[in-house]
Length: 171
Image (cartoon, rainbow, N blue to C red; front, side):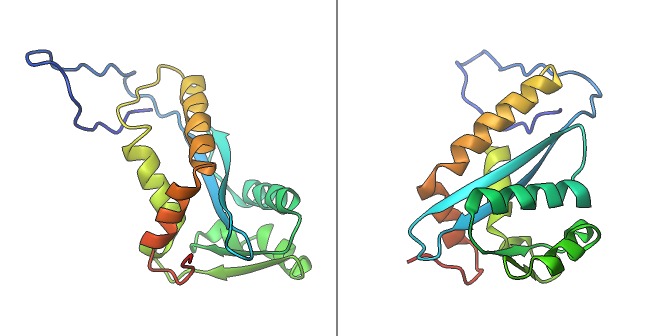
């Protein structure tokens, strides 16, 4: 729960003090999907949060199922090469649901092509910068607030797409 410390403003002679809990390894893992409507009129982002855990195949599959239910339409998924994305239980589910979900992998280690990586960078260096939670619940609450705000900020999401060299450019 250590904060990402960024430069900030303060009155002259008053150095800001950022208090944090020492040696805490607690965290909130986040999974995200940037959703573009078929006619590219709407852009939204959906997120899933896991406190004190990592996303594995089962939790990725649960997120993918929720995303399918929320969208109610066929989807195309473009994701990085995390082994859990194409391992069990995700791969067999994708084969069974290939009429609803198509999955494509980005080249190996290509975070610059992934616009969702830009969301993570923005979140950590802007709204969550210098945030030092005392408890895991504080971190979870603040992460929910930030992801909800970003998920509905269409101009910001469009800027992430425009800055990614991936050929999903919006008109």
